[in-house]
Length: 253
Image 1 (cartoon, rainbow, N blue to C red):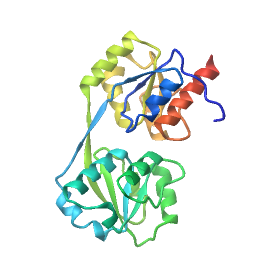
Image 2 (cartoon, rainbow, N blue to C red; image 1 turned 30 degrees about the horizontal axis):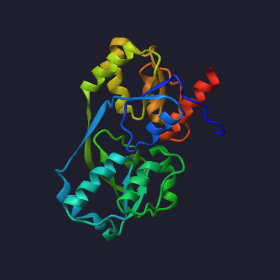
Image 3 (cartoon, helix red, strand yellow; image 1 turned 180 degrees about the horizontal axis):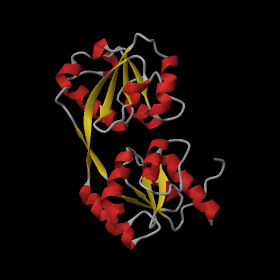
């Protein structure tokens, strides 16, 4: 992307909550307006903490596919008074932002796939790992089976947080769209898509908004619900999404 357009007169509605202000600041820099109605919320799960925290050293790799998993794991490390630099296992992450979140709490990330998706992860991970390696996948309650099913190594799953719908925000977002049609609504996960479909689109449909999606999995979920995806960046980050929306508007008008 050689040239970034502008967002003057455009509003981007975020249905997820970026972990940093970078994307929001970029919208403002490009002259746009930000609205945020996170359709999901996460809650740390602790019921298996004692088991997994006492056996971390037995794993060759820890695998993370979201910043939410990193945040939940960091809370566990703090409660159990375990420092990142005392762990001997290697770290793998799907996505630049997930890797950055891990580095911020003291980990060195040994592997990230060239494309930020679990599908690419399972294709490329064997190039840097051994068949005999034992992997611990720290996941959310709604994570797909791609990692466990796609790797030939032993993969143990630890669900460190659960994903819950935010119905209040869904109601507020529905009202906002009726009052402000034709805004860009940005989705970053199938979970947010499904909540929008059941709580909002069932009443007002998809045609009142323009749609942006992070990742092919999110885009597929939207298409499965009958929505049209107007913008899908090749880099799976909120910042890239904002910049792609700016270019789409620039090209269109």
